[in-house]
Length: 70
Image (cartoon, rainbow, N blue to C red):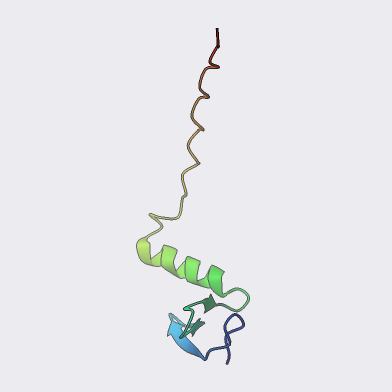
């Protein structure tokens, strides 16, 4: 199979029953429909779910007070 980005040959790897295609040149990774979800589910099972919850983003910093010119 050829890479859709750079047209180099792609290599297929099996990770926990999921077929992952990776380009040998640009190192891009291409997954079929549902494979990303399968990998995430397997990773969550492996880690015991400790990384499953993503914390909410931090609040933006307060704006600087407006400077007053004389």
